[in-house]
Image (cartoon, rainbow, N blue to C red; front, top):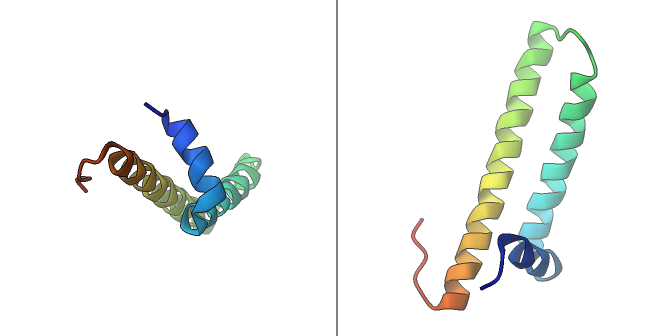
Length: 81
């Protein structure tokens, strides 16, 4: 049985949707890390931070769905969403 990381590696090289999700996830993470360098965030910055976190989590969740779906396809069982 393949690990999630092995499946992710396969999807990185074969699935453009996964590649785009992962690139966006990394970009959002870099933006968040840059924001968090400030010791104090203004209320508008806090709002942007929350939006970035939410979007980043959505990308991560979608990547997990693609990994799960690929695993189910390999095992020949239907994926439940």
